[in-house]
Length: 116
Image (cartoon, rainbow, N blue to C red; front, side, top):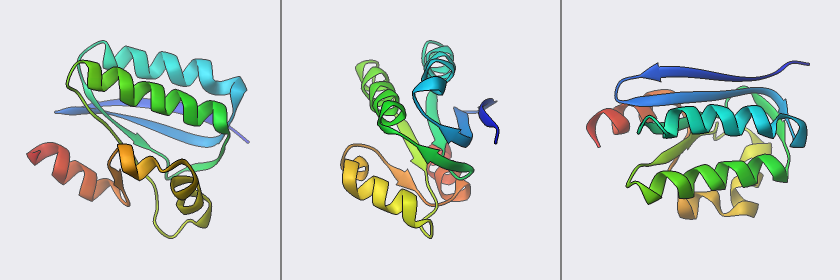
């Protein structure tokens, strides 16, 4: 099983996609990817559509990114499929949707980021 962190620069935001399983072993790659786009001043969308697992270490890095972006009046949003019970439960447990925008598809996020 691969565990990739893919970064795509899109105007007016950066898209960071997590593919496969992510845990403590991949948090360094994730943090470096997020730092690279946040330090450029980009708003960031994190796409979890192809993510099959993530542990609390990864969730911690995601919350860290949200806080770092907010310090510069930027934003981080997440794309998580509504039909996926794992991510729906993860969002409920972490209350992620209380602190950050969670979109169910890229099209909704792209529209909002392009017009927001």
